[in-house]
Image (cartoon, rainbow, N blue to C red):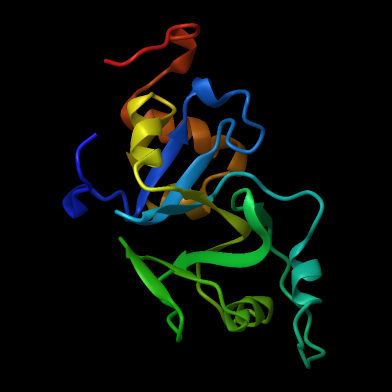
Length: 191
């Protein structure tokens, strides 16, 4: 593989898991939003795997919230296998505070307790996805996995990320490219 070229960075793109990852519990049929892709590696958040064992209320109970208002309840997601106690929020850019990073195309990421509190009391971004944990690839690891057909790269959009049912996100991502994996079962290799 050649040296990393910033103009080909995958920031703000979606990775869609191919059937070659079917044995990987976390990444099977995953859709991952890439927040950062540099020569030092890549970081992303899985956007289609809701958590069953924790709720948003469980997360807010860890914060020193001093209010009697009713808290909003939203889904929590498994963002990836690393630091699964760390809250990460993908959101629309109508919300911007210290610590917010604009990724692109109207999507930002924040990981402060302030955004969790703002979401809890309906003062946060219009569109949001709260995840525990994240995914990370070492330098050239993601490029190698893409080359090996483990991932397909798709353009991200807010409709798919925030407004599509979780169970439909994987197939809708493939539909963006017109791919049907059921026609390729058992076929592997590089084109």
